[in-house]
Image (tube, rainbow, N blue to C red; front, side, top):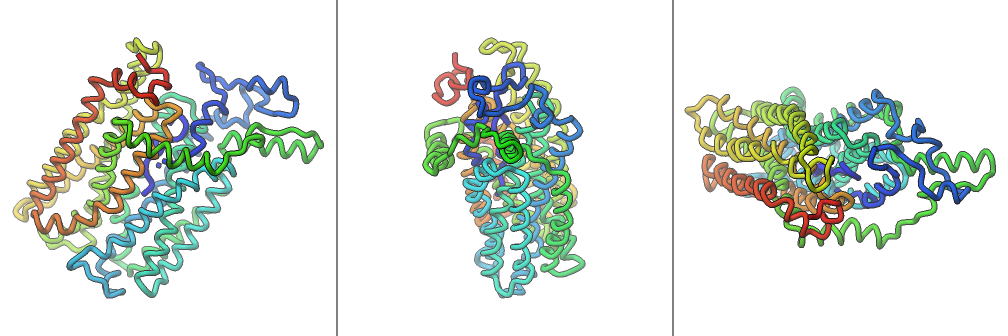
Length: 519
C-alpha cells in the first residue's frame, strides 16, 4: 500500500525517497526559515541559485493560495488513487463467479488486493528517487497515465491471472503517486502549523481512500457489474488528467534551478549549471539509502521497530476490515455487499474527527517549545504523541473491543457501526503520531526510518487480511475482534514509554542524536 511517508522534514506514504538526507543542505534554509544562497554562488560564476530570498520561483515563496491549491490537489489525488486499492473488495462475489474462484477454504478473492499492495511496497523504492531527479510535475503525469492504461485490461480481463498481474502494475503506480504527496508538502511549506496540517491532511487522504474504496465499490456494483468498478476509474481518472496538467506545478527546487540553468545556456550560451547538475547519485548510493539504511534502522533502532509494529497494525486493520466487516454484518444482519460496503464509511467518519483533532494536537506540539530545555525555542518531539495515546487506548483498542462485544444479531446494527468510528479515530491519530514523531526525532534520517516502518506496514497490509476469514470463523466474531483489541492494547503502551523516557532514548540513539536532541 501507499504508506504515509514524509519527505525532508515532514509525513507522511507514503517511504523510500532516497535523496531526503540531502534536501536540508540543498534547500539552504537557515534557522529563521529564510532561504540563503550557498557560499559557492559567489565564488563560482558557473553556478546558479535563487536570485534572492524572495525569488518567486522558489516553491517556499509560492503564494499561500497556490500552496494550498497544490496541497489540496495532491491530497485529493492521494485519496483517489488509494480508492483503487480496495474498491473491488465489494465485488468479490461477482468476480469469483466470473472466474470460477471460491473463498470457501481460502480468501482467493483477496489476491488482487494483495498484488496491489506488493506493487505499492516495491515501486516507491526506485520511483520516488526518479521523481526527485526528473521532477514531480511531468513524472507524476506520466506515472498517472500508466496507471490509467493498466486499469483497462482489468476492466476487460478474461481470466483471474490477468487481474492479479495488472494489479501489481497499478499498485506500483498508486504507491508512487500517493507517497510523493508528502514530498510535495515538504517542498512548498516551511516548518510550521500549515505544513503540519498539510501532513495530517495527507495521512487522512491516504487512510480515508483505503476505507472509502468498498463504499464506492458497493455503489457501483449495486447498479451495474463489477467491470464498471474499473471502467468508472478509467473515466474519472482520465477526467482528472487536464486538472493535473493545469494545476500541478513543479515543486522540486533542484529541478526548477536545473530548468533555469538550461534556459540560460540555450538563450545566452553561458556555461552555467545548477548544483543538482553537478551531482550524480550512483546506484550504490540509492541502494544504500533505500535498502541498507532502513533495514539497519529497523533492526537496531527500538523506536523504529516498535513504532513500525504500531503503525503496521493500524494499516493492517484497515485492510482486515474490508474482509471482517463483510463477514460480521452479512452473517449477523443478512446484509448484501451493498450494505457491508456502505457501513465502512463509519471508519472514515472517525478518521475525519481525528483530522479535526489534529489541529489541537498541533497547538499542543508547538506550545511545547516554551518548555524545551534541550533546544530552547524548538518543540519537543514527544509532544507529537499526546493525542495518539488516548486515541490508541480508547479509539483503537477500545473500539475493537466495542466492535467485538456488540457483534450479536440481537444488537441493532448502528451500535457496532459506531465502534468502527472509534477505530478510525484511533487509526488516524496513531499513524499521524508515529509519522510526525519519527520525522522530528530522526531529522535527516527520517526518510530511512519511515522506509523501515513502511516495510512493516506493507507487509501487514498484504498478508494480515489473508488470516481474517479463518480467524473470524474459528474464534467467532467476538473473540476474533477481541484478539485484535488485545494486540492494540499492548501496542498502545509504546508511546507512553517514549513519553516517559524519550529524552534518554534519543540521547542513546546514534541517528537521533545527530538531530540535535542529545543530552
